[in-house]
Amino acid sequence: GQARPGDTLEYTITVRNTGNAIGRSLVVSDPVDPRLTILTPVPDGGVVGANNTVTWSPTAPLSVNASATFRLRTRIASP
Image (cartoon, rainbow, N blue to C red):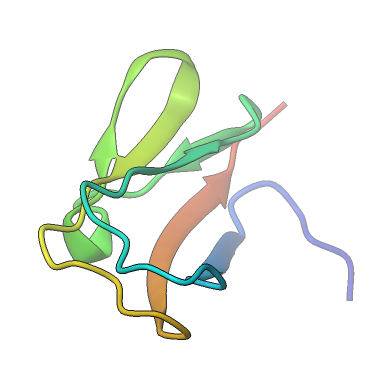
C-alpha cells in the first residue's frame, strides 16, 4: 500500500569495502528527507545532526570484502 502520515519507515544501509586495504576511521552519513521524523535512539550508534542527517562512525575497521549494516527508523510527518 501507499505510505501515509504517521507511518513508520525502516531503512537499511549496507556499505562494503571493495578496496584492497582495511577501512579505518569510517564515517557513514545519510541525509534524511525533512518530511520524515527520525526516531531515536538511532540503532548502531547513529547520531542525528544538522539538516536531518544521521551519521554513523563505527570504531571497528572494515576488512577487505567485508560489509557493515546500519539501520534507521523514521516516521512520516503530518502535512
